[in-house]
Amino acid sequence: MATVQFRARIDRNLKKKSDAVLKGLGLDAGSYVSMALTQLVHRRGIPFAVAESDEGYFASEYGLTSEQADQAGAAMTKETASARRAGKLREIKDVADLAP
Image (cartoon, rainbow, N blue to C red; front, side, top):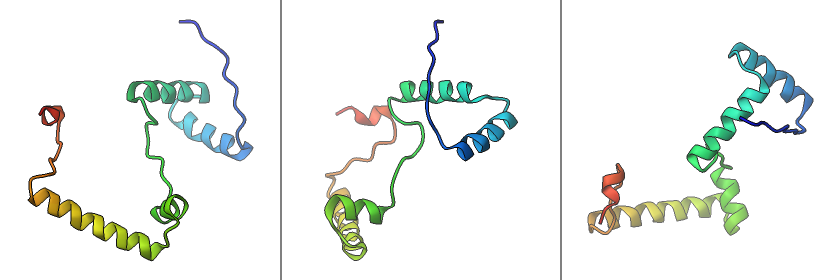
C-alpha cells in the first residue's frame, strides 16, 4: 500500500498527553490517525459523537433562551408521542424496518 505524509499542527500539551495514552495502548499517533480515518470512511461520518450543548445549539441556531428551548423540547416530545399513538410514526430497530 502506498502511503503519503500527513502533517497537522496541534497543541503541544495535547500531543504529549495523547502520546502517553497511545503508548499505553501500544500505538503511535500515525497508527491512531490511520485507524480514525479508516473508521471515518467505513462509517461515512465521524466515529464518535460531536455535539455542542443543547443550550448552545438552540441559542446559536434559533436564538432561543434555555427556557424557550426547554418548552420547544417538551412540545416536540408531546407531538412525537401523539404521532406514535396515531400510527403516524414507525420505530426503526433494524434494516428490515425500513422496507415499506
